[in-house]
Length: 426
Ligand code: IMP
Figure (cartoon, rainbow, N blue to C red):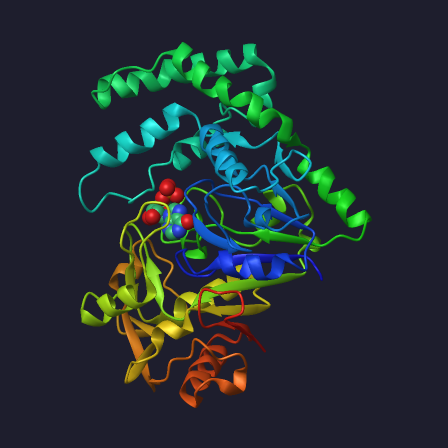
């Protein structure tokens, strides 16, 4: 199998974990290249169930090598906890199969404190709805060139100096602006160093490991987190996460050339969801939205928050197709749409009296578009036992074909339930 990038093409929570799990069997390496423990998915393999936030989902597959690239931000405390959970389940998390780039930036206690303090202080309407995991402040320090990298754990003196420098600035914010107690250098240093013996053995040079893998003819899966419309540049700014979620970042986020990325699969939920704040043109604040939430179990794995729900939005999908160079789509949760008399698809937007096939790019414009819908017939049958394309009701097939037609991207997989065998390959 060639090298595959998996990205969520909406606002996250598209069901990437299941598709990664399915493809991982044919793959030798699974790599994460951006985001941190703001992500979350539940993976069940051979009866072992794990809610993972940081460690690549390939870890539950025996023999697969999992890498955490330089583009990820890693909370050493969370990493240690996730290791313990996996060890308790008998999963092999030895450094020979779970490796972290020395260039990966560490989420420090002050990043988490700042993320939460800042979010609490924002007025309604300005809040981002972050997961509060310190993601944004960690990326800020990385770009400001004052971040702590995983390799710094091997140099306690340097680590302490970096913490002292960071707190000089951050404690002013904590005390003067947020009315909090200052953090002590010793306490932060001790907390992070306590995790060092668990992190350091996993450190590696991910770029060179991947180079070696290809020399040996191995294949690699790049596991994207969050969703394309949460991308720091191309998403619904400022209601976004703090990393580039687009497929191109798979190259920068682990130190390989972009010509290594052969296949780019967009994971698309059959309808749309979003957690946190920000524009969502097809959102349904009504009984239909409630029904999608209830039938789809739309509550966050990381924060438990109820997800906002709405109809499929092809404008958003078209934008994802062009931003990522999607080669194909894996459509998830089609079963959740069973039972509707009619299903709506947003085919374009009305923006200031103009019909738009792609999102207007002006700041805040997405708040002001009106979706233009097309209705297609629903189906009543339970499709969760369908094993082949032909077994799907005609209306379900027609819905999938219409998504293909409107987006210009072929749908190669259709998921009709959470189990691995509830997947139709086309
Ligand atoms: P942050 O990434 O914690 O800074 O949160 C920024 C925005 O991205 C918030 O709206 C979060 O709800 C959203 N977000 C972050 N990670 C995920 C994810 O994995 N799935 C869905 N939404 C996410």
